[in-house]
Structure formats: C-alpha cells, structure tokens
Figure 1 (cartoon, rainbow, N blue to C red):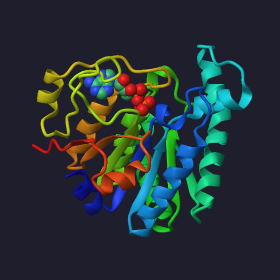
Figure 2 (figure 1 turned 90 degrees about the vertical axis):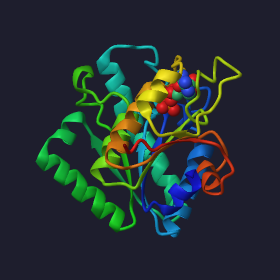
Figure 3 (figure 1 turned 30 degrees about the vertical axis):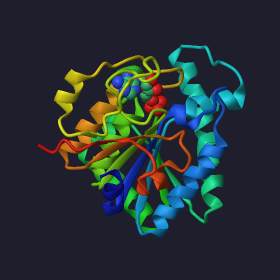
Figure 4 (figure 1 turned 45 degrees about the vertical axis):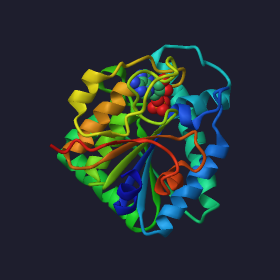
Length: 264
Ligand code: ADP
C-alpha cells in the first residue's frame, strides 16, 4: 500500500522533524541531509515534484553560536531561529547543489494560510519554483510568530502546505516507524499500526506518550496533520527518517510505516 501510494503520487511534501535532522548532541546531521537530498533528486528524476517542510532552525542556531541553548525567553528563542535558519538553508543549499538542484526558502505564518491574497501568493511561488525544478523549503517564520499566533509545530505547517499546494501525498519523517498502540520509546512490546482508515477509532485505541528532547509536536500533531490532509483526500505516511534511504526503501517495500487514509 505505502509503496503504491508513493509510486502514484506526483506532488509530494516531505516534512523533516527536529529529531531526524539532528544528531544526539544537537548538531545538524549532515549525513542524513546528504542522503535526503539524494533521495529527493531520485524522486525528481522519476518525474515527481517535491516540497520540503523542515524543522531544526533553533538547533542549528545553538550549534552555530553555542550560546542561549537553555534560555526560554521568547526573544532569545526567536534570535536562535533567526541565526539557525541561515545555517539550515545553507546546509540544504550545499547538499542539493551536489545533485544539481536549487532550493528556494518560504517562511510562513498561520495568518498566511487564512488570507486569500497571501494564499494565492504562496501558491504562485510554490508552483513556479516547482515547475522550474527548484525545491521549495518551507519553515515557520519564527521572527513574527509569537506564541499566541504560532502554528507551533511543523506537522501542522506541512499539512497546511500540502493542502494549499494540492499535493498528492504528505510524508512525515520522524524517529519512529509510525504510530504504535503505545509509545515505542517506553514499551518494547508496542505494535505498529500500518494503516489508519478511521482516525477517531485509532485515537480511542492507542496510548499517547511523551515526545523526546528536540521534538515539539509529538504524536498528537502528527495525527492532526493526517486529519487535515485526509479531509482533502491526500494520504499521509508517517515513517522513520533515521532509517537508511527511507523514502526509496518505502518505495521498494523494505521498511514498515503508517499510512493514514481516512477518506470517509
Ligand atoms: P519529530 O521531532 O520527529 O516531529 P516528536 O518527537 O515531536 O517528532 O514526536 C515523535 C515521538 O512521539 C516519538 O519519538 C515517540 O517517542 C512519541 N510517541 C508517543 N506516543 C506514541 C505512539 N503511540 N506511537 C508513536 N510514537 C509515540
């Protein structure tokens, strides 16, 4: 099922979680980025169009300036994101360059998705970049997004972006193989759910546990992201970005994942 859905999809949004993008010590995992860019270039060679939603600006900022990692004040968090966003984009730019691809940056806020002119502008930019073979890289604009108006997690941002772009598929890469009946980090006997066709029934049947160090949304925002895109008939795959060549291996049926198709 997962493999078929990827094969059939032309427009794919891939979201990279902070846990996937960073090493244990909080630095950017360049090996992962290199491999991701290789996989995306393979997909584009097969005629697919890819947009990326990426987390990791704050982590990249800490890695860059080596200060303020424990500061909780909003202005310092925003300052770290401002510093890290540059580093993050230049890392994507460098790695994609090796595969002959250019990148374009889109920094968005919640308000942008609920304003007609803005959504039209976002759509125009996205379509133009992709039509010209450029990879759009989307993140939340942390400088203008104070807590009250924040989308707050990139799972939701990815779902809103996929819906706005009329994508065929949303793939969330995290550090787990998918949704389990209980938190796999706490329970060794947790069982993976491979297909979710009714999100409400699924929520009632699983235990939702804590997220870990760099994560923001946790599993709840991933489920809500599925709800947003499924409403538009877009399937969502949750898979483990820590596994080697995960997207290409999903295409070859090599790895397990969860696919959400709640189209009722
Ligand atoms: P990311 O940074 O990749 O977006 P998060 O850390 O925010 O991811 O959320 C994923 C985490 O949610 C997993 O690492 C896992 O420990 C936790 N989790 C809690 N309950 C569950 C569950 N029922 N199934 C899967 N993961 C769960």
